[in-house]
Length: 109
Image (tube, rainbow, N blue to C red; front, side, top):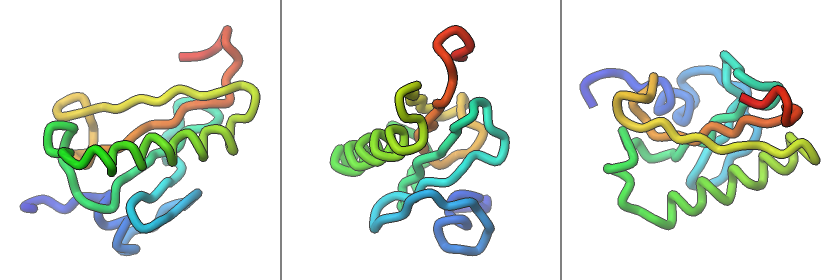
């Protein structure tokens, strides 16, 4: 990897983050620029720059299952939505899921 990846640094504990969940495959942190009362990022520990590079369907399933778990825990009855930005739509070139929750339906993004 030519450029430093902030998510790889967070996974390696070289950069700070507010960690919500961690297991052997994924890390969940609070977004530093939240767009909702609950705004979490589900990050695979392996570097994958975009969805096309993520051929491990089990890893993607783990990411979604983890997103469901933390979304349920953090957002409760208000629910949550999942978002994946890939390639040029993403600000960071390391695939991740956004878990956005805690909004009323009328104010949801």
